[in-house]
Amino acid sequence: ISPAARRGHRAAWVVVGMTRALAVALLGVWVAGASPQVEENLRRIKAISGAWEKFRHKGEGLWQLHNLEEKLDRSGKVVEREATVYQVVRFEGRSYHRLIQKNGRPLTASEAREEASDEKEWLERWRESQRTGKPFTEVNDNHIRFDEPFLKHFDFEDQGLEEWDGVVCHVMSFRGKKDGGFSISPNDIVLQRLQGKAWVSKETGATMHLEAWLPEPVNIGLVAARIESVNITFEQQVMPNGMWGPKRFEITLKGRAFFKRLDHHQATTWVFQPLAAP
Image (cartoon, rainbow, N blue to C red; front, side, top):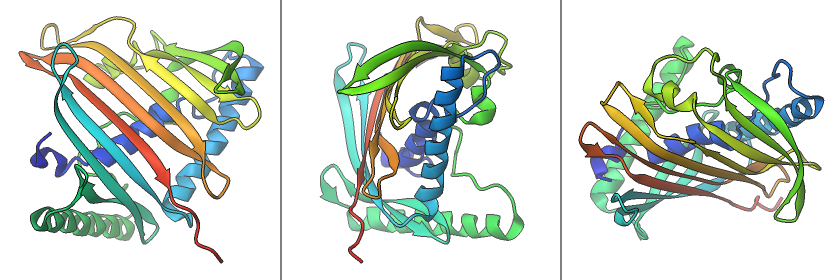
């Protein structure tokens, strides 16, 4: 995980994008033919997700992202590790994840200069988007988003009630539709085969736990790449202001691209900071 890899493709933003996906998986699409309970679950999840999206850019509370990235060998042993901490700050109605710590230490002078340069460039692009009205995206924002237009590609099924960590939950399974309108991009090829389960609180509608995985390996471009396995988990938590927000996101991916191994583990934890006293 080289410093160069961080520049232009911030781990925090990857996590934010994927969290909007798998974290909130089931983020409120009305699925044709779904049971009334599934539709109600999706409606409540969408409401929580919408509140979080509004809060993270314009709310009063702040938080940190504690991110761990690990490169694995074929046996799953860690061969390279980087731990980073990002402090969320807000500029002109938009949240930004400022790198403040790496591997348990403050940034060096050169790392701080690089971070300041990244932040300045980010703010300039945000202001430009505000002036021109063009959509704003993070640099290399090519990660997967399980937003409303995307979720129509998935089928959901009610699996009844179960407890998760002492909380009674509606359990929903989901899987990609074979005729769900996916493209032939590598992301879609994998996602079309993704399946999983979500435990949604009966009382609050929060996603207490979500698991997603590939049931079998996927070849991309004949023999160009092979994704052997993907395993994802996500959980939400109550924030200091009483709203629900993300708690933990974790993904382990194993595969190869041509002759290069792509074995990777990433875990991110959201640490919300108490609201200031009035």
